[in-house]
Length: 119
Image (tube, rainbow, N blue to C red; front, side):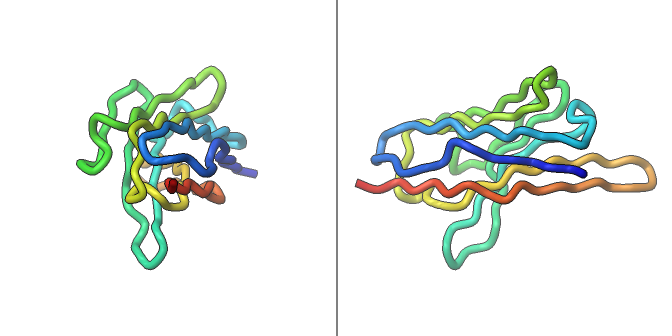
């Protein structure tokens, strides 16, 4: 059974930092692209950042220079370090693991963790 379990969300003041974690089980984690997405109330889910198994990263423009995605394949865990948070970053953050082969695609989601930025 595949599980992605996020942790580290919470309430933080503007300008503060949080570190999200995503613990994977049931998959060969190092074979997957890992990503973080977020969904604010009334909005569609949007990409935040992705990291390949080799460490190549991609960020949404809205978080470039403030967020850092990383992974530890030995621990089957991914991370999202979020700095200089603003109320616009308030959302449920979801971990995603995605793998494509020539014939199949495997796509898994975590249950989400709430991040609230407010004074």
